[in-house]
Amino acid sequence: MSTNSAKQQDLLKKAALRVRQMKTQLEAAENKQSEPLAVIGMACRYPGADTPESFWELLRDGVDKIEEIPPSRWDVEKYYNPTPGMPGKMYMRQGAFLNQIDQFDPQFFNIPPREARSMDPQHRLLLEVSWEALERAAIVPAQLHSSRTGVFVAMMHAGEYAQLLSLSPDQDMYAATGS
Image (cartoon, rainbow, N blue to C red):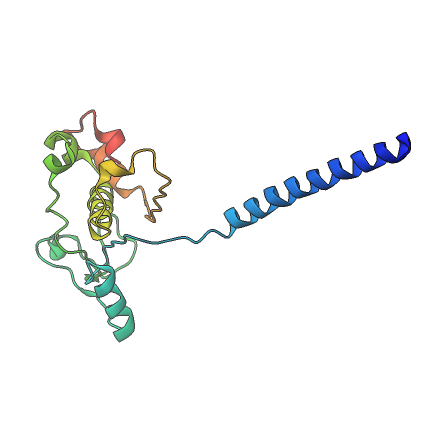
């Protein structure tokens, strides 16, 4: 065999080896992109539905959870005015309300009560629902450290709570982080 032919054969072997390596890398990348996603824990809070199952029942049955404003929330008569746009007033007498929003246990999350009072209620709910999702998945939170776990949260912040805190005479150092 000539030296030229041996060099060509050596180059072809190297090229074939490199093609195999690139094919293996491509397959690994494609597998990674199509790797299945597993939802193993889910929790939610909606008006009239405190679990994913009860939420799906509301959707399935077409239930509307709009109701009169509960007296435990605020005095409707104090704030009601049928004319829209009146300062400090509202023209609605109904809404959709979550249950037990005042039942947050700050000690459970190692949060001082003073800090908890300054927390946006949505922040409190996020903590509770996140913990519940882990419980429903039978996961011990400490086991998640350094794991390939993603947490996806949907929440809407309207800024109203931050505005209320800024008006409060007893605002404390937790007002910024709590909202």
